[in-house]
Length: 527
Image 1 (cartoon, helix red, strand yellow):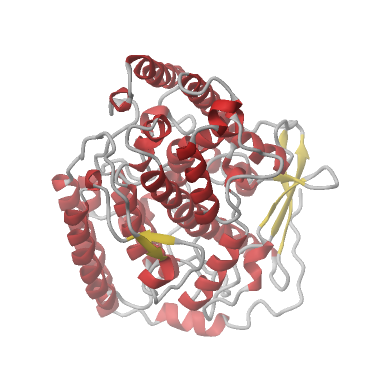
Image 2 (cartoon, one colour; image 1 turned 90 degrees about the horizontal axis):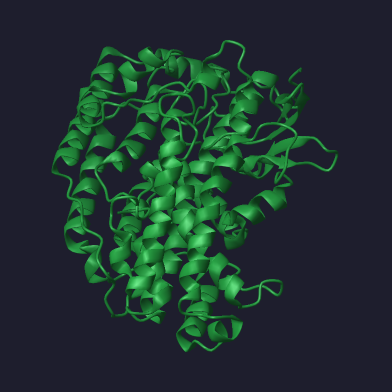
């Protein structure tokens, strides 16, 4: 298959200044970058050694106060989001708030220490790790990123391989002419920093034998290779900033945590069902805001292509398009036309394998308390909860084609659990061996045609490695202790047992680094 790109703007308009900057790195710059990397890595090693696992505990009654995100973060006033002002006791918020404040001050100092320009990343995993994975990281988490087998082949069709696997497998859709595509043209409408191509674009795929193959990669004004790099950078930014931090953390889980704490009593059966999803989430999402998308100097603007003011506009536009039901796997694949495909689609198969036991579990659990639609409609707390979700979430959770019913409640709860476990595992953990491979999946695409810079490559690793610290894991956190009665505890344990069986049937090793595995699921997205 051939790769094509449309051209109308000279691709080298800013290449000269970019190249001169790359050459301007001095011995002092290299020393500053060495210090920056190693101080952060040593601090992370200390954080691993001192990490405290907060046990999963039953919820408590008491309202949580909150305010608009823009009021809490005036430097990045994204609309449609909220942030907790007070926290439930089980969040253990005060120690973490102190760590957030200390970490924010330290990062500001370290940012001033780091050089402004660094050379391009090397095109080899060992050489890359020598830059982005210093000794402190190796001691904290010895499992450094590895190149997945499907990307290691010299003839690998990188885009086609990423299109059918996590973490980027959710972007594939069937187009009107029967071919397939990844469409990130929405990102090309926003200005970027000088010297960078606008991320995003359009990739088209077709069948080649039994496999999907890339037909073309297009973005106006860019030659083929640069258009390809820009699309990959767009995938990385969209997944990290918009799907993960904004949609999953700050829109979905914060809204559900606030509505549930404020509208359902601590002994309400739906609150007990969902409570593990909210374990330290509100304080954890405060940390996401402080370091990722809540400050002009956050990682979201530092690692990717856009200035903070542009990032706010993009976030506003993205949240305006948010639809909770797009996270329901059945709906996701139906909307994209990929429920069935004539080619292997490991991402879909993995997601649906883990989705099925969660749906069955939620239905079995809810039947203990709601014999049918009438019982759901008669619950006054559920009515208040639903109304609060409709107010907090963009476009709400009720629809004319999704009236409040037993099935609606089961799908709502199952989707929230899926987002908190499998979806977050894909966005937060599976990325370790994909979005960190900076010469393959960059965070920015320089107009010069060079690979992305080493500083951004290191900063991306820095944002992810902390999430590998010891945490409560879903299979061992004793979910059944949240149950109101023995019958509910038995249903909860059956779900955990089924996920354990799935894990036992999955092959170990490097055969599929893109698979979400039950043993890697956390009890929540921010515990």
